[in-house]
Length: 250
Image 1 (cartoon, rainbow, N blue to C red):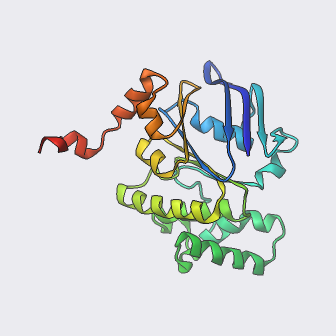
Image 2: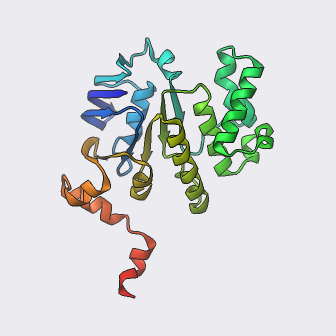
Image 3: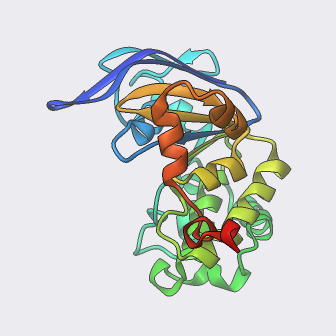
């Protein structure tokens, strides 16, 4: 689905990516994980063409992502950012319908697709006429997901979509998102810094460090065959509350 070949990206004096190679398989969920600043979000921005690589190439379904073709390729991608990124002056309905209207969809077709997406994401139909400020954080993320799915894209890119939510809302949305991914069978790339979330969603987990791909695989592979001492340190650093309380000492 997506092939990243020898890609480097520098912002000022900071190197975000060091000549990485990464292949994203179709119809699976690939999770990019790592510390802040390791290059996770930059990879998504390169795929969708929001930034250009300083060297190397990004291919989407065999087509190189360049400024000349990026607009047409973006219509095959859905993009969800942290906190939703909704336009505050538009209702939920208008946020979701924005690109469809731009492309000339009829009102009937838009409404039919919105009804499908509201059912899929468990979003209340009466909430579609509300503005983002009138929605909860979880509802805003559901609207953002509907907007990303509106054109029925081939791939979904999600940049820490649940990071700003409280734990209970986050847990509910995790379950719904996984159900949606399984129902649609789309290629999904999800960025997170949470190893538990990565395990919950990921068919493949890719751990990055300082702009480099450190290891790809499952959590079991990370634990049993770490590619580097940092892999073990990263996993051990994310202890659950029960671990901290010493659950085994009871």
